[in-house]
Structures are given as structure tokens and as C-alpha cells.
Length: 86
Length: 86
Image (cartoon, rainbow over all chains, first blue to last red; front, side, top):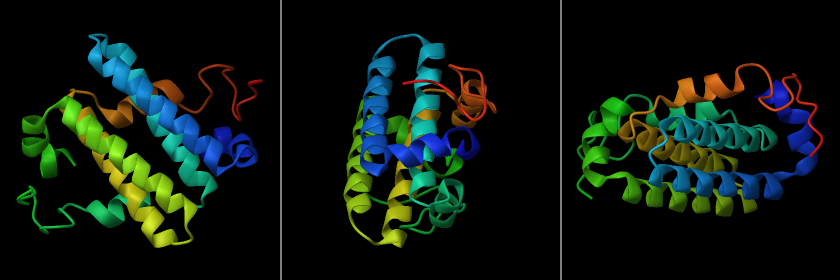
């Protein structure tokens, strides 16, 4: 994703990339109300792509960030599966 | 992520999980305005985690969805790096 879009994303800047991501999340919300699984899958892909772009231009490794926080156990209760009482 | 939270996420349902995801995205937006890289990383991790949870309960493989759509080239212009004219 970095190779594909970094040159364009970094020109666009953080705020506008964030706004695109927020728009994609709304589109995903709409798709989830329908019954078209293929369309929903594509909206999930778009959200991941924009999230990855946003991480790239802020210099954050998205996969590493997720693994650091959620590596095999819940960061709150330290168990897997999570046993938190919300 | 599936093993960690699926039992809880599936009880919560799609709409409420989506709303949590939207809240996390707002928190990420706030973090991006600050200068705390570690906090921003954690917010990215939260967004990924909730997005993965939402995909799990809708029966979609998030990684596969992203690869299907963005596998090494732009889905619009079919090039890498992307050459689309927006």
C-alpha cells in the first residue's frame, strides 16, 4: 500500500486523508445495511486501504501497532478470550 | 482477534460494533492533532481491532478482502504506483 499510494498520500496530507477514511467508513456503514456481501467486502478493503495510507503518512506501521497492543491477549484483562466486564 | 473477541462481538451485533468503530476513528482523529506518537499508534491499533471485529461478525476475512481489491496494483488505473488523475 505504501508503494502504491505513498507519493500521492503524502502530498494530500493527514487531514484530507483522514476525511477520506471517514467517508469510506460511512460507505461501509451503508453497505452493512444491505445484503451484498461482495460490495461489503470491497468497502472493508477501502477502509483498510485508507487506514494504511493514513498510517504511512504519519510514519506509523499499522500492523506493528496492532500487534503491539493486541498480541494474543486483551490489553485490558490480559486474557484470551477477553473476560472484561463492560 | 477472532479468538479474543468473537464471542463478545457477535453478541453485541453489527450496528453497535460499527458505532464503536466510528468512535475509535474519532479518537484517532483527535490523537492525530497532537504530538504523541505512542498514543496515536494505540488509536490506530484500536481502529484496526474494531474493524477486524466488525469483519469477523459479518463473516468477512479482512485481510483477504484487502488483498483481493488492492493486490499490488491500483484497482482503478491497474498500475503501481497508482497513476490515477483525481
